[in-house]
Every structure is written in C-alpha cells, then in structure tokens.
Image (spheres, rainbow, N blue to C red):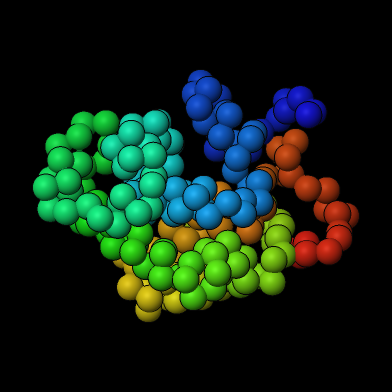
Amino acid sequence: MREIKHRCSYVNMKNPLYIRYHDKEWGVPEHSDRKLYELLILESFQAGLSWECILNKRANFRVAFDGFDIDKVCAYDEAKCEELQNDPGIVRNRLKIAAAVNNSIVFKEIQKEFGSFDAYIWGFTNGGIIVEDYHIRTTSPLSDTISKDLKKRGMKFVGSTIIYSYLQAIGVLNAHGKECDLCPPRAETGPGVSRL
C-alpha cells in the first residue's frame, strides 16, 4: 500500500485514531452488513457532535453495545438503556440510545426485505461510487432521498446531514479533498464511477 503524505485538511494530525480512520476506512466501499450497521449506529450518535468525538469513543461503544451484535441490541430493554445512559464511555443521550435500538429493528426489517442492507443502501446508486469534486457541503439530493426513505421506514436520527456523512464513510460517496493523496484523479473513469 502506498504511503500517504497528504491528507484531507479536516484530519486532526495529532490524533492517530483519526489518521488511521481517514487512511484505511473513510471513503472505502463497504459491503459488510455488520460494518454498515455499526457505522450507521455511530453516525446517528454523531448528530450535533463531531465525528472525531464519536471516533474517540468507538472502542467504548463497541463494548457497551455488545460488539454491535444486532440481535442483542434489538432486544435491549429499559434497564439496558438506562445502563447505557450511565456509561461515561459513550454519548449518554437517552433519545439517541432509544433510536439505536429502534434503528436496529428497522435495519433487520430492511435486511429481510432486500436480502441485505448492503443491497438496499448501494441500490440507490446501482452499486456505483459517486466521486465528488471537493467542496464543502453537508447534504445532497442522494442523502435527502435516502434520509426520507429511512425515516419513512421508522428510523430516527437519520437526517440528510447524518446520511450524507454515512454515505461518505461507507464509500458510496468519495469526497477526499484535492490536497489528499487518496483523492481520485479527475480523469478517473470506470464502471460504477460517476462524479457530482
């Protein structure tokens, strides 16, 4: 793997977790339902906060949420949710914790309907990656559409800004900045690659 010397300007170069996340995960096409699930739950906790804050607590989230075992999370009762609200290692927001349980149930319903959540989420681009010309934005027509559909299905804390961030995280959108070594060349074309 090539050495990365130049990264997106938002990366906190003093945070090894952030550097590793940027270099190895962010924008890499993800198709594992387990990882798609974990990232969706984490993104929902990001609402009103920075991704770096969530990233710094990800290891604690994994412990608190039983390794993001979706069947276990779906079965969380009020006592478990109260336990999570008292866990200083995660974001202790009652509504977000309740949403995580609710969204887990909806996630499973989507898996049942489409065969996998991967088929559902990547179906919006027919499996293709959208490479953005770098600019500051927080939503797009695509994130608007997916957010609206997820809300209709009953998910919470999945507004267009959260979904836009999620699509970047799982690689549906590739938004590495022009200053970054991971930014695809402007001339890059190929099956399943398009530009905004």
